[in-house]
Amino acid sequence: MSESTPSFRLASRALKKDDTVIKVQGQVIGANELFLIAGPCSVESEKQLMEIAETVANCGVPFLRGGAFKPRTSPYSFQGLQKEGLRLLDQAARTYGLGIITEVMDLSLLDTVYGHTDILQIGSRNMKNYHFLKELGKTDKPILLKRGMEATIEEWLLAAEYILNGGNEQVILCERGIRSFDSALRNTLDLGSMALAKELSHLPIIVDPSQGTGRRSVVSAMSKAAVAAGADGLMIEVHNNPDEALSDGPQSLTLSQFENLVDDLEILSSVTGKRFEKQKTEMVDV
Ligand code: PEP
Ligand code: MN
Figure 1: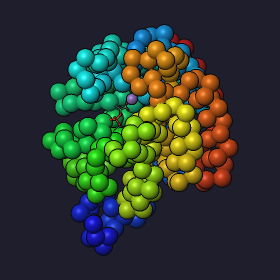
Figure 2: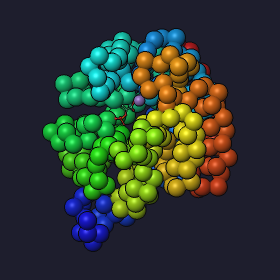
Figure 3: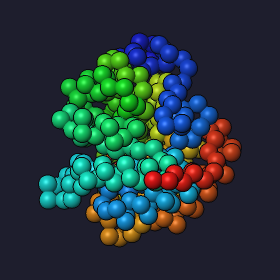
């Protein structure tokens, strides 16, 4: 990859030196802000989502994640609550004043998901779905683009290029770990690539330490490492009962682990130049 003439023109700092800053739902992604997203891997029930959303909001975290349509390795695994999951996300967002991010798995689901989310999440398995990326370029909502689990940095930035080239400039990169020789962790969280992508590209970049490690006991450590390394934000899986979770329980923080992590992030953010303050999100009457 030549640094003087990168193949990913629109995504590169060669074309645009200053950081791209994305504003969504009153939040700033990029610049001097640390942008936090938390929630379950999958939306499972009203009780589950509302309990988690309450903790997320009380921690001052502005965005709730939750998969309604889930890309699962096995067709026999839980596939998500689908439209009912979207309805529950709406309800949680309204009740607790949170922004929503959820995955859109396929072009045929874009219309269904579009109205229920503030940020469209594009999963690792879709990073090379070029026709889909082109169509996402025609949308007007921010796109969180996960790194493919086997993608090089150049392939990842070229995937972003497809979306930018279609006219949507609101792309957020997300490092979520790559496959490596060692199966002790689910993936290898590649913070070196995160830092390099930030150097090569003006796009904001966040880190997902949950898919990135697959193991609850190391998620807080890697969250702090990512922030110390300059990430613009984090997306963290948290569950009210991780042992009974229908997907990704082993990598989901408990509610109290999550609260402790947010306390640490608030302290850490005061020395990293990316601000996060744990003010309480206002409750909204429904
Ligand atoms: C997820 O965020 O739950 C997920 C499925 O992520 P990825 O696409 O990175 O595997
Ligand atoms: Mn997950």
